[in-house]
Length: 216
Ligand code: DX5
Ligand code: ZN
Image (cartoon, rainbow, N blue to C red; front, side, top):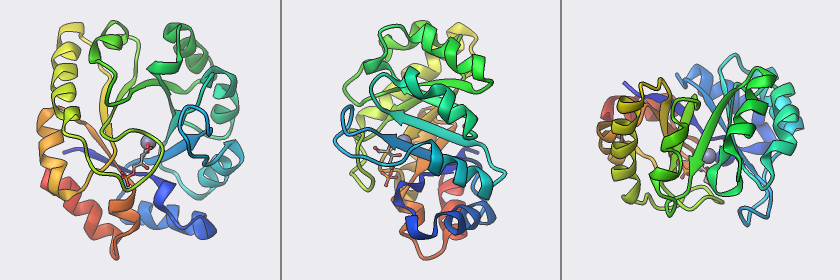
């Protein structure tokens, strides 16, 4: 069964601590935190101070997705604020290995994300080093976009490559995930499902999280 990681991007920010507590009570496995800089993606979201507030509200692992340029400049700040996983985008890291090393030095676990247009081959050489590989199933920047099926084949290819490499990394999928497509992505190899609007815009978080989990 997959882990479910609600993305707080679609939460009510005016009641953020209560929202985080609510999804924890509703059975979430991780909290997914989308950080946007207005450069790598057109949108702006949150920084380390808000992550620290989230950390104070939950015991769950904090899965921090940095959609920012030069992410290495902020690794320590997010680790200090409580990040358990820190995921950076392949597209903005000319030297991913050294970014992974910087993340590991903080005690956090390193992840790498790829956009829908970025081939799997760009991260295969790093599978043995990565704790997490995130396959974007929308172009990053906004919640509540339509799921892009191109991610399914990429998950499948990564699962095979992971087997060949002997890596223990987890495969995560992010963007447009709902009960209707959960089975498809889990069958293709996803271990962790990120769901923002599907959870936070639903009337019953526990029912939605259970539906995501059992659909798979
Ligand atoms: C997209 C973010 C996602 C997004 C997911 O830029 O990385 O985490 O918030 O939201 P939904 O599930 O609404 O597509
Ligand atoms: Zn995300």
